[in-house]
Each structure stands twice: as C-alpha cells, then as structure tokens.
Length: 268
Ligand SMILES: [Zn+2]
Ligand SMILES: [Zn+2]
Image (tube, rainbow, N blue to C red):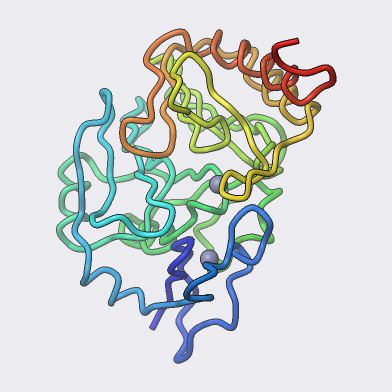
C-alpha cells in the first residue's frame, strides 16, 4: 500500500510499512505536529474518508476535496490552447473525479509549484497518462519518484498554448508559477502568497513558522515576473484570488516587503 503524511499530504511509495519520517515536514518550512507527532495513514483510508470538491473559482475550475486535510490546497484545471494542465495537485483522486476530469477533456500535463503540493501527483499522472513538470532544483524533494516526472532547468519553460512556467525561487529554490497569457493570469501557489488585504501579496521562506526571506530573494521574484503582464493572481486555496492589477500589486508588495525587513523599516 502507499502512505500519506497526515501533516503535508505527501504520498510515499508502495511498502508494507509506513516511512520512518517525512523529510518535507522535518524541514523548517513545515512542521511535525506537536500533539500527534509524525503520522502516516494508508492512502486508500484517506480517500475513503473524503469527497471530491469541484467548482468554479473565479473563472477557473477548482479541484479540491472535503473535509480539509493537511495544507488544504485546491488544484486548478487550466484549459489552455495546448491542452488541459492540472496546476498544483491534491492528495485526493477517485473514479468519480477521474470521470469528471475526462468529461472536461482529460489532462495533457501536470505542473506543481513546489514540494508542499506534490501530494498524490503520481496517482494523477498515471490516471491520465500525462507528464509532470517540476523544476530541477526540487529533485531531492520528490518522495515518490516516477518516470513521468520531467525536470526542467533554467528560468522559464513553455508548456505551449501561452502557458509559461516561471522559476521564481523564494519559498523553495525551484518554486515555479505558470503565467497564462490568454487570461492575463498568474497561478501563484504560495510562491507569491495571496493575503487577506487583496491590495498586496507577500512572500515567506516558511509560512507556518514565520521565517521571512532575505530581500535579495524577494527582489529576484519581482525580476522573474517583470516581463509578464497579468491582472489576476490565483493563490493556492479556494477564493484566494487577486482579481485586478496583479502585476502592479506584486511590484508594490516587493517594495513594501523590502522596506519592512530593512532598517529603519516600514512606517518610518
Ligand atoms: Zn509531511
Ligand atoms: Zn509551501
């Protein structure tokens, strides 16, 4: 059987016993729950206790599962001119969800921002016989290796149909986000974090443990995104969406961030 980490929803390879540890959670960017410790459960048990949640999220079909589990991200079905791409991934997949996605045209590819959302990517890839695009810098964080995973190196990688993976780094060195030219949209995962104040976004090395990034890394995100025009920013969870002025908001937010972590700091 395969195993799921209860804190980050990473799926581990087929084995009779659960893994000894989850390196993704045993890292400053995540955490091992203080009350339960490290817990793994059989993937089938997780699936049996959950239901798919498929609905529109600001003009893109969102794919999640209920009730909430681990980090709780939802994926997005990007219908580009070059075929359907599943952006980011979830731990859930069952026959009903496969049929639903087949009815939408199936999948030509999967692309995932960073290791926190790798989850059940291999199940998804096998169900739709499609490749998974990850950045080379995250190779060491793949806990369930598979021949369908295609690592790309460098700063941008075109998936066709006006969809370009942009390597931003920051939260993870190989943190990537797709720019969708046709929709003037950026799908940002938590590489660019959509926050409660929708006039800004933010950036962190660890969100749960509140570890900031150095200004140079945040400025690097701004320069990676500078060539791209976009209005909408889709974050990693339901309704975490900036609906207008996305590119300006990223630019302003990087300036605010750098001011906030520099002396004399924000507000002075
Ligand atoms: Zn984990
Ligand atoms: Zn993350």
